[in-house]
Image (tube, rainbow, N blue to C red; front, side):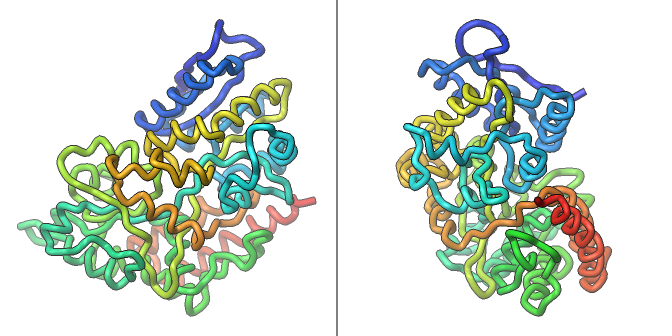
Length: 416
């Protein structure tokens, strides 16, 4: 059974009028959502019950089982790569007309990239809370100890790789490493900016993908740059080492020089007391690029959709965005908050939060398709085997094509 913690905000107990808002995250992230709901309650909003899920997969499963049982959460937070299946089945009350009619929100106040990412069949479905991207978290103390300067704006893949090499420290015994230079998850989400920065593409058409297009000279260049972090000079942990201790924990404990991830890491990283850390831009192979990380509040169709939208207006409005920005969880989708001290405050790490805003113009998204989550699962398995040197590049590309083709075809067949 999936465990959920229920937090009641507002007056009275749970009732048919109570809006259920489902989110997921670590302890520090969930604390920020509790603060958001409490602020909404103080502002006089209708009663809200916060459903907290610790694990993303469990969160998505609970949404799906809720729909299957005819009782989905009234509001749920979901990544743009995962909402299309719910939208395709008509389960989402679209945000398009509600945003146009809102007296609180203006579309022009938001960055266009996440709005585009949450548009399905030409209609905005959900309201994005953040416009994050893949960045490099780095241990400044280790950089200084290795005689390395802070990464400069626009640094290159060669500089990034050289830093990883300097930061990797062998252990006294043979074939062991005490500290690795870099950690990155082997997945299409992490691979994408390497391919784009090399001048390649992940799919032929992000709006209507028909095939994976990594198998080009530029696409292969990006793929090899990604795979070489593990298989070339052993700059990153082996699979068994990651299974024993995940990458985020290794960075927290000072056992990784650099860690590639999104803004979501910040609330947890702010608990670090033993060393100084910061963020740097994703390194450039040929051109600047990064991959969009964005979540949005989706409203389920149902009798509480009006009350649910009232919460969403607050959550993605100035007050809600400031609360989540101060927590470190988001790169605000609302421009005015993203440019404010609530997000850019240099007294709270990372001091270089401007890196996230500078990346927005060259941040690209993965496709929005009803079968994309299934495709990611299948492709990620092949990439994982390639990253840990169990498959050749040729075998990997063939496996990716074989796995992706029927899933993309099924997504097209589901379109009207």
